[in-house]
Image (cartoon, rainbow, N blue to C red; front, side, top):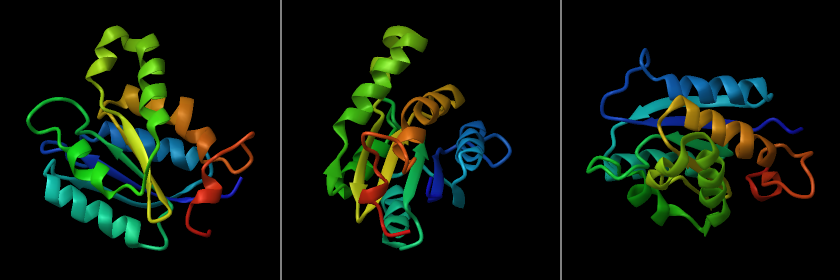
Length: 164
């Protein structure tokens, strides 16, 4: 496996470093898999702040992957979808579909309120998942980990990322 440099962004108006359990779960998961944490940030759920923060990361040649947690629901302050989707060069439509399928096994029909999504932008991959620790574990353990493992067959996303 080739270790990747991964940025974790928690999208929230209320979380602090002390209360951000979802970000902590993602950091624990990526480090346990042998990847490197590039940075960890809490970003306000504001379209333009989110776009600016993510744009800086996808411009940075040292960042291969961005994991965003939060802001994927349907409230007035859930802006991750609107902020990030326009930045994509390519949508990874199957991610959201698969996430909701797997999530259905855990939370039933409540999964339809998740707008989990992913895409490629400037040779970085961006995964946007709901802001609960359970959703972060589901996304990482059941989808993301294998797709960021260069030895996973028949295919994975590592050959589509910035050169490591």
